[in-house]
Image (cartoon, rainbow, N blue to C red; front, top):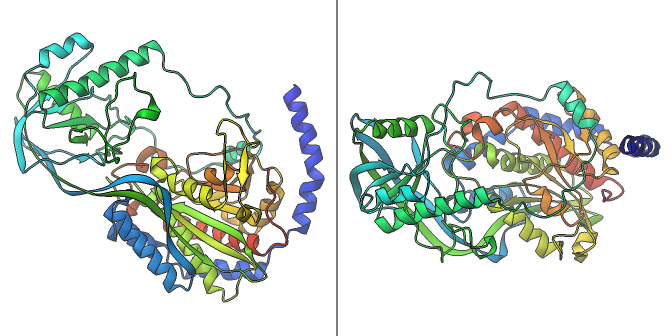
Amino acid sequence: MKRNLQGLVALLLLAPIAALAQKTEKVDTLIISKIKDEGLNHSKVMDILSMLTDVNGPRLTNSPGYKKAADYAKSTLESWGLQNVAFDQWDEEFGRGWQLKKFSLQTLEPSAFQVISHPKAWTPGIKGTVLTEAIYLDVKDEADLEKYKGKLKGKIVLFSAPVVVKPGFKSDASRFNDSTLLQMANAHLEAEGQGGPRRPNATMQQQQKLTYAKWELCEKEGAVAVLEASPASRLEDGTILVSAATVPYPPSVSFDKRVRAQHANVPKLLPQIVVADEQYNRLVRILQKGSPVKMELSLETEFTNAGPGFNVIGEIPGTDLKNEVVMIGAHLDSWHSGTGATDNGAGSAVMMETMRIIKSLGVSPRRTIRIGLWGGEEQGLIGSRNYVKRVLGERLDKTRPYDSIKLKPAAEKFSVYFNMDNGTGKYRGIYLQGNEAAGPIFKAWFKPFAKMGASTITIQNTGGTDHQAFDAIGLPGFQFIQDPIEYSSRTHHTSMDVFDKAIEADLKQNSVITAAFAWIAANRDGLIPRK
């Protein structure tokens, strides 16, 4: 009751402010019409996306593929007339680059079939082509480890348990319906969780200990490679989810003392390959029936020199308020079993197309409009967080919300950051990240796009992507609400994250709305208000 009363009071207090903001917000309808015409009728967004994905392929951070895509983005932005286009190098080490040079895995006996599979990132390769038997590591407790000693040398080990696969009766793709959007619009802001990270219980610790013992056994016994089932049971029909190679550590080693697979001083790793659930299950069933499985494996990988990562930055300079900045962005890096189309080639293509559309207007904005294409998002928002720390400021105590922030002079001139990173789906509105004062402003800005289905303003937070780097130090940073399409059900971090899964009409809409928001923010009288 108390919470509802507080919410009612807040709404009553904000109502006059919201009405005033919508009346005073100026939306240049002529410019919006030009943006719509350019973005909907002369779009280059799919051409950009194809170059980023089809041509340059997957863009693992610090990999040759990432560098090729960054070179393409830089040269393209320069060709459109953007200024100060540069590789923005981090001031911290990331680790080695990696790419897959050659790979094949097939079963020869008891019957021949090509195995749907993909190596994990930063996994080592093997010399030549290996013809060997497979063994299923059926371990329920530490006592079970004994029966595999002396039997794994030179073998391919099926490491994980089979995955339950059932027919899919629900559609992969969906859009937000009106009732869901209404719930989002009427939502309250939930309090941030307190109490720090969850501590593992005794059962979890025992399972972690057993998993480490399995890795240790495979390494000591000289297994040639490890196969694992795709870790998400939702991904039936041969789709696989692949990320970084596992670096085994016993539970006694704290997380801050562990290193990731890309680090040069990582412990020796076994080659690790993820297999489609249906085929992994088949291999296990064959072995459990006592029938030998003979497999042929070829795996060539390449590591590149360790070093810092980098982002791609460029801008359209402003005029009378050129020292003030409006920023848009998306992460350029991806995982590697697909081509990173919906995560996040789509966002990068939309942000590049946004800059092209704004340049096509033939007039300069008052404030500088800057694009950031971030690296290292998949490893923890590294690129955007490093940029924010170097350029804008940082939170000195990560456990405290906003009273330990140290801002740099550039932050005082920073207006707003808009991000896209939730797949190919069209914009339906925006998450306010608890910034109530921005709500009425964005409501006015969305009015020209209401007929396109974009008008929902929610006070809610959303996480997992680069706007959080700005929001963490109290600067206005926002992610648009997007229709889910197949993002969580099929394409996120998977082998099916490819160009064919992108929806042209949705990406055109997103480019137009982003361009309009960037333009209006760059030309309004004041900066976007902060929390």
